Length: 342
Image (cartoon, rainbow, N blue to C red; front, side, top):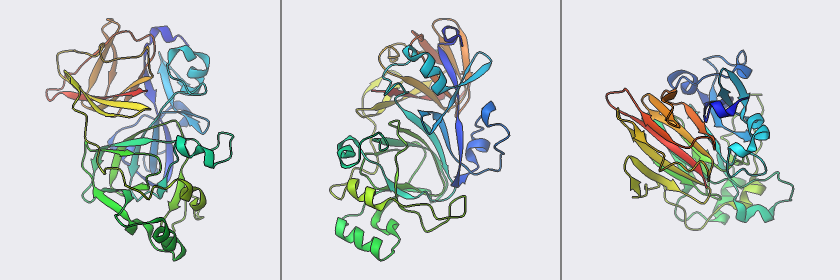
């Protein structure tokens, strides 16, 4: 495992079949299937989530080093000095792409401010997340926050009477390029017809509030977590439906969102190499790149074309990446999303 030869690693996702999943990730986006998952998946499987960059106990994505594939967890464990900001010895963000062919469950995540409400031991982890919409079919929407006037009392009454809880929530039909921030405590759901990029704290803690009374992949109803959800649900002022990008811009780099845990920036790439060295902080934070559109060539540490990436692919920068530029041969240009831990 000679990381020194590959300061920017090609990422391979860990795919997950979901009852609500679709066919876009393996087909329209052409996601690669890592060697460890080959034989387990077919192009007709409803893959709902691709864990693009993941280092959790529940699962790890993969990286390619020269011609070999390794789990990200294995790399981080053996070479922790390659990544800054590790949390308990693990990569500090969880990055996914999601394809919702059907509505996801209505759910909520806890934040740091809620952890004292649960037994200690690490089972419940905080989860602040954001969504960048990649594509949406006509009518594709999200549910985000409660409608005005919804209170804890009216919500609990709706639960007791077995109502469809989605009618209590704000609904927004989304378009490609929109950004939605989902702070902890915000009730939410991704609806059918939406494919998106999801960036979050490294946590898989989800409290399911409503699941349309549908069976899971095993034929049984999936469990709800109402007691835990009620501990963290925000019934006060709801966060904005859409997050307006910050006005901060450095040449081709525009900051889209910055929280205390992560920052996303959009990078416009043309045929002339775009020097990203001034924007990179690989010596200070964990850094990754997602190709939003086009074909991108990454020039690393002045060594020429080190890595060519297509739309939908991810790469992971190590601390050995000291300079980086990007270019494209596409006449219409290309775009990257720069994802950093904070």
